Length: 380
Ligand code: KG4
Ligand code: ZN
Image 1: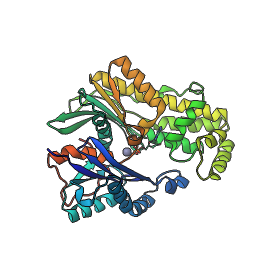
Image 2 (image 1 turned 135 degrees about the vertical axis):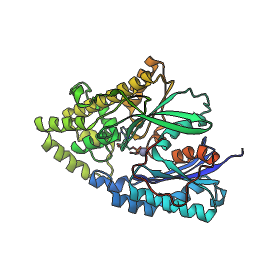
Image 3 (image 1 turned 120 degrees about the vertical axis):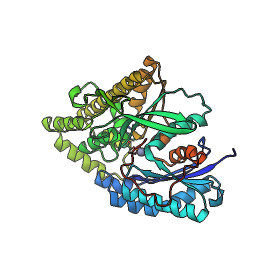
Image 4 (image 1 turned 90 degrees about the horizontal axis):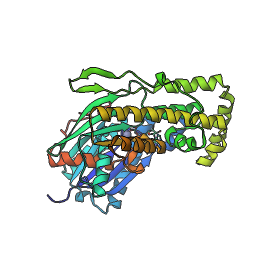
């Protein structure tokens, strides 16, 4: 089979992205336009603004992805677009544009689940490094702003199947990072800032009772008769942080920090650090330690129970330094190989969408003309 160049388009949340990937194994171009500046003053993604920004960005972003790849529109063999899960209005911008382009170019269009994309970010980069010896079964933790999901991933004659064995009962891990950052006046998105600030704090300064983040697993209650479920819960830890702020009289300091940072157009990590006292840095470090320990502990317990050989950790939160270190240590103790995407492909991008589309391209699993956005699309 000759090479297939797939143009991927991603617009499920606050990044407008387009990429060209060769045969699911080489990133030829990867363009990401982040709407960070638009949403930042609101402390979170505003869905109406996200759709408007996608509409503005989609044409130049796709054009740049083709230019960077030195490809013309005609040089593309297929298009791939995120169908869901995500914000319906945001998804629709990418889908409408991809449909129109596929029709005009007379090329097949492939609909991709965003979570499958995050899993294929790992596969894409491993193939790119020349690693084709992946061991099965694979357990994938997709940990992002919208999801904290565990899947057993299997490949059957080039097509992939996923079985969910755990998910968050309330907030996603990335959502907890973002909410805690917002509570502390650290802006949006919170994950990257907390990641960097945590290094300066004492992770053992504040103890978060395990009962606040531990959720009884549904061990014994077998879903589809296949095995136990490992669930997460991250809204309790956010409430604990809020309570800590209130009982330790931190509100005035937070207001000052918010005002101070709002006067800087693009605050750097030094600005954030200067705006934080030691108590805040300790709180940030302790929060991150508690959340990471829970994620790693639960995921490794699932890996043990399902006797997996490989572990993928992917999605925006997989960019976190402490998370990576702790997963590496724990996985090596358990004799499981752990794989992460590069930091650039951990957060939302379109290369992962084009890569996930490749097996569907080979199987001629193309989207029906009437397909539409599915905000709560499940991965199966
Ligand atoms: O995968 P992603 O780009 O979008 C979704 O599909 O949600 O993930 C975004 C999430 C945000 O919650 C952000 O705060 C978090 O990933 N994030 C991080 C880091 N970088 C991004 N969380 C912790 N540490 C990081 N370094
Ligand atoms: Zn994502």
